[in-house]
Image (cartoon, rainbow over all chains, first blue to last red):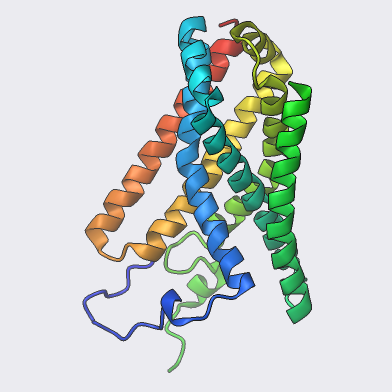
Length: 132
Length: 127
């Protein structure tokens, strides 16, 4: 954590709104947004687990909310955020190895992240409904 | 300008925050663990969705499931604590607000972590 002088009023480098959005940049931003969303989404996991620990009545109440249309919609978004953040993380592992920085490689990785996350999320929900 | 760092500081290589690459490294260690643990978690949730209370309690009563869930929580909560710290340090520049946000981050993660660990342990030990 840096403690640089904040009173100096030094010039700032241009921020996000200056740049034209490009795919790799959007994937980078989405990685952070999905991470933050998952952070607050853990409240849903905590509520579900604590409801199960609390007893059958309270669990059925929470399960009913999660099973509703709005509940499913939120859980669908949760699934996508989880899958997208995971694929984004795998992309970071590849970069950590020193690979995938070339123009074509990074474009391919960005496309694979978004196409992969959307299709994997849909696939997981199809499996979910099939095993029900 | 010549290097102002002492030879000892240079050898330690810990930088101004005094923990070197520790934050980065722990982020990656928990990330690797999460790839496996969260995959397990997603499969568990898919197999449990729509099940009755008894089925969920029975699944959590399986020691293997309970142990893996404890790992999911530990690795996941630690990872998200590190991640939110980076977001706070990137965007909140006033010293007072930053310290408050970092404190809030720690408290939130502690609450979520301990709450979910307690719930899994209670279910694991028989509801």
